[in-house]
Length: 92
Image (cartoon, rainbow, N blue to C red; front, side, top):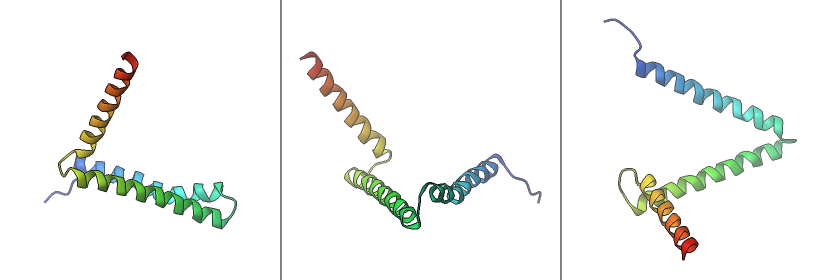
């Protein structure tokens, strides 16, 4: 059996390199930008809190309407409603 890498394999290797380098590079940049260790850990805790809030937001949207692509449908309907409201307010 001939061993070879396909297009999907090479794509996944490139994606893993990008993600892996980001994981090991980001802490260095944050450490350089903060004056002390406490601030460094507070920045990471704040980032974790923001990520957790984002995950809860997607969980809330997904639990309201259990369907495929619900996030896109939800935001598109909200944007359309907002645009219609603005148009009505503008031309009323």
